[in-house]
Every structure is written in structure tokens, then in C-alpha cells.
Length: 341
Image 1 (cartoon, rainbow, N blue to C red):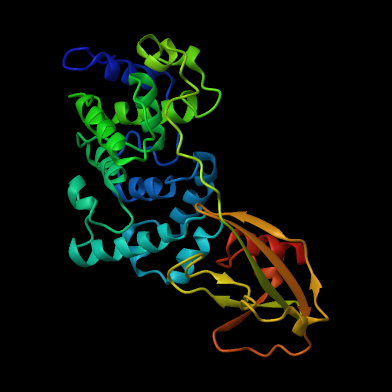
Image 2: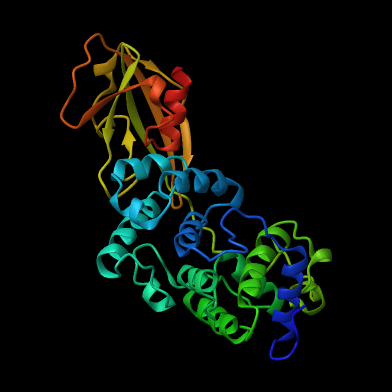
């Protein structure tokens, strides 16, 4: 049990709850052995905007293929993207490998220990850098991911959309002021666990929350109001036609540019804007696939065109439909191709 000495009531309750009821069996939690910062870093990047249940199988497969920082830095980028395929937010994978290469080149292969140094690596912001420093090196640093913002906004009655700079600055100041002198790992994990398991966006389990006695939102019956939502804006809709050129059990794919949507992945050729679809009059239109990105929604119309000659255009790759599992494909493209099998 953690002593109250030098620890705020808020932090004490979070730590005590985490030790009793928090998550202790996640595959990246390294108990009873020297902590490998590479594993901490990998998990934190995968967990950005992605739920734990989704991340676990990807984390295990990725770690089996790239067990350490050096193997990731030296790997072909295609292999990295293939293992990330389906996890989404693919810039994370590109930044992950780029950061590994920088650590090898600039830090002699040793992961930087200071949160400020960690934050200089590609794909790592202030909160992620702090989480890595806490779990890998026991640093005393504040985190402020989406779950933690929600916990703090409700517990202390912080109004306003947490993405607004002024509100975010207020939350950062609060997070810094609440840091305990001891038990920093349990405290940080506890905040994450509370936001993920109890203080959820909808249907929170306030009766089981260790902060219920001091929660402003609960006391004022404002759980549904806090944190304040982003002002509603119309979500842009886009549409694209993808060509499914099928030849002798294979399909033609093209590698996407390194930056942008599905950067570095293999995708189906896209029918250029304004190019008439009647050129493919013999094609069969497959069901439209709808896919949501962060800032827009995309309707994909696949056109299945069976061709007799497997001519390979510049930059094209013919992929056997039996080899889908190991290919670096975006989730909606994988769905389209899986329907052919």
C-alpha cells in the first residue's frame, strides 16, 4: 500500500486502485525483469488512437519479427508495413522505423532516457514521450492522452473541448500538479486504466471509480457533458473507383506514395478523376466499400476486370490471391480482395 505522505488524495486513490484493480497482464507490461524501452515504445505507438484489444495481436506479431530496435532499423520498409497492415494510421509505422534508424545513428542504438530527448523522435508527442520515460525509466512526468483528459475534465470539472489550446494548457498544468513523488508507474498506468475501463466516454462505471467521492462531474450530474465535445462539423465525403484487374488468380497492385493516405502500402490502381469508366465496359461492379478516416469518409467502388494477359505496368505488382495474408494492404483493399477468394 502506498503511503499518503507526499502524495495528493487524487494520486493516492489512483495508485491504490491500480494496484488492486488495474491491468497487470498486458503483454508489454514487463514485471519482474529489466524493462526493455523498445517494447514500451512499440506499445505506446501502437496504442495511439487504437484500443488495447486491437493492438495485442499486432504487438505480438511485430515483436516476433522485430525483437529489438536494431532489427527494426535494418528491416525492409515493406516488411514493416506488411506487419502494420490493418492497424491503421500508417504514418505511425513509417515514423517508428525512422525513429529506430535515428536512435541507431545518433544514440548508438541506446534508447534516449529523457522525455525531452524522446520527444524529438518522429511520431512522438509530449504525452507519448512522457509515458515512455515513465514506464521505461521511472521518470516523473505527466501524460495527457485522450483517456486522461476525460478523467481530469470530469474529476475537476474542467469545461471546454480538450483539443482547444487554452483548455489543453489548463489540463497540462493540472496533470503536472498532481504528479506523486512516488509510485509514478502505478499512477500513470492507473490513469490510463481508469479512462479505458471505468471513466469511459459513454456508460462510465462511476460506482466502481476510486475518484467518485471527489468527482465534480458526478456530484453535479454532468458526466454526459464533460469533457465538452468538439463543435460539430460536416464530415467530408469522397469517392474513388479502384480497378481490380484479375489475371490467372492474381491481381494488379501499385505501391502508394510514401506520404498521404495508405502511404507505402500496396493498393489497387485508382481510376483517375474524369477518366470514363466505360473504358471498362466489360467490368463487374463489386459492392461499394465505405471506410472512415479521421477527417473524411471514403466510398470505394471496385471494378472487377478479368484480363487474359498479365502485363505489368511500371510500378505494378501482380499478387497471388492466396498470398493476401502477408501483403501490406490497407484494410478496405484487403476486404475487397478477400471477397474474390
